[in-house]
Picture 1 (cartoon, rainbow, N blue to C red):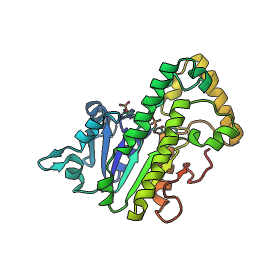
Picture 2 (picture 1 turned 45 degrees about the horizontal axis):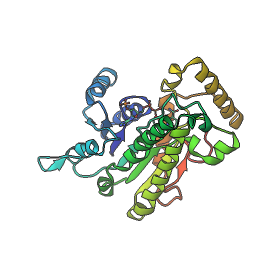
Picture 3 (picture 1 turned 90 degrees about the vertical axis):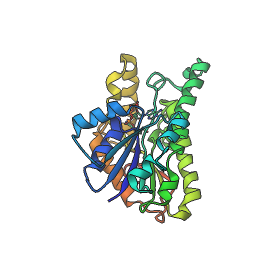
Picture 4 (picture 1 turned 120 degrees about the vertical axis):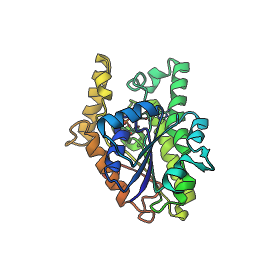
Length: 274
Ligand SMILES: NC(=O)c1ccc[n+]([C@@H]2O[C@H](COP(=O)([O-])OP(=O)(O)OC[C@H]3O[C@@H](n4cnc5c(N)ncnc54)[C@H](OP(=O)(O)O)[C@@H]3O)[C@@H](O)[C@H]2O)c1
C-alpha cells in the first residue's frame, strides 16, 4: 500500500497513472487538477466508483491555489486528512506544450518576441515553478519517499544536437529547468532518503497529433523520421497504458543509493530515449 499525489490527472498520461495506481485498492491516490468537477465526472464515467481516489483542485500557475489545496480544514490540510499525515510518492505529471509554437524553430519564434516571451514564461510557470511547489514535507514523513517528474527526451541537449531537433523550443527549455529542479531537490533531500527522478515516458499518444494542421503534420512527420533514424525499431507514439507501466517500473526499481537519484532517464531507465 502506498499513497500517491499526481498532478494533471484530468486526461492523457496523468489519467492513466490515476487509473493504474488506483486499481490497487490498497493505494491512496490523490489527483491535483484545474477542474475537479469535470475530472470527477470522467472518473465516474470511465472508472466507476473508486473510493481510494481523491481529487483536489489547483492551478499550477497559481501558488495561492496550490496552497489552497493544502489548506488546513478543521486543523489539518486536505492531503493530511486523506493520507493521515504523509505521502509516499509524488508524480509531477502536469505539463504544458503550446501546439502553436511547437513546430517552428527558435529563429522563427524569435521574429515575434512578445509572443515568444509569453510562451516561454508560461511553459516555465507550469512545467518548472508549478512542479516545485508540491508536497515535500509530507514526502519526508512517507515510507517510499519518491518524487518523479515527467520530463522529455527533447531536453537532452546531446540528443537534440545529434539529430538537429529544432522543434518544441519553449517546452524543451522548461523541461531542462525541470530536470535541474529535480537535481536540486535530490541534492537537498537525498540524505533524508528521498529519491527525486525525472523520467521521459517516450512518445505517447494522447491525441496531440489529431489536432495538427497540414503544415504541422509535415513537420511532425520530419520529427518522427529523425526518431526512426535514432532508433530503427521506433514505431510512433505508444499507448498511455504501456508508457505508464514502463515509467512505474523504472520508478519502482530506482533507489536513492543506486546512482539514479536526481537524474533524468527514459522509460527504459537509461539514456536510450526510444
Ligand atoms: N505525450 C507525450 O508524448 C509526452 C512525451 C514526453 C513527455 N511528456 C510529459 O508527460 C506529461 C503528461 O503529458 P500528456 O501528454 O499527458 O499531456 P496532456 O494530455 O497535454 O495533459 C496535460 C495535463 O497537465 C495539466 N495541466 C496543464 N496546465 C496545468 C496547470 N496550469 N495547472 C494544473 N494542471 C495543468 C492538464 O490539465 P487540464 O486538463 O486542466 O488542461 C492535463 O491534465 C507532461 O509533463 C508532458 O510534458 C509527454
